[in-house]
Length: 290
Image 1: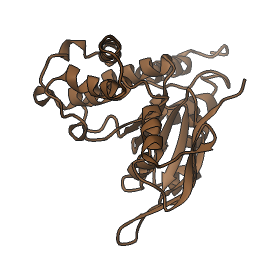
Image 2: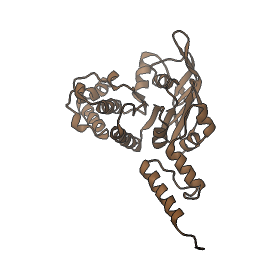
Image 3: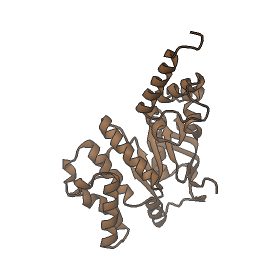
Image 4: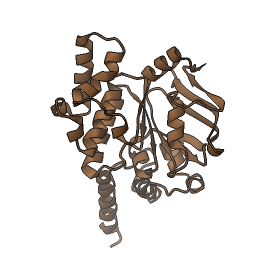
């Protein structure tokens, strides 16, 4: 069975009041079980795109499709749509409002009309996968910035959506916070989640994404597998972005023969350092003629 298209945007066009353009004839495909990075510079319209993908904004032209069918904007249609397509905003404070972490994460499942046992199970599972079970009873106003990010994601995960949209998920986090969040997102993906994240961070896109939609000036310039898109200098330049450092190192090592054509390229700093060390050891080894 081939890869299934779960969510799709066709020719989306949208301008804010005053005629400020945000999306321009945009096409995008979200495939089930994949991790898609919507990659572009700040101000390119990435957040506006995510708000269209979960029905918060309605396009002035074009359409969004779920399972190949046009999504509807009636109240019942929007409710069903947002159960399937969860959204986590860049600023977690925009989504946290309950007194405690557990209460906040339970809000969505309670609104689904689930019984108490099911709600408790969903909250427990979501807190575990985000590695914040110890925060269950903590007041939300006493959380750190990184903890708030994880709680906001846990609230979306507890709804068990088909697609999870994340707007700049690592923005404002330190290195430890980023590493912890990425580990949690990898675990979600391993459990079958489809992830779409908007970012301007090329290194994050390379580390986490299977596919990349290169985004600039309100449209997708190119979409495909991460290595092909991020390794295309002309496409990256058109989006005013530089290729990821780890990808550049990996491609150089492949070109020099230190990596085979089918060997995986480094996705982490540790893997890149190991590759560089192997390359230097190979250079230092004397030739048979010496």
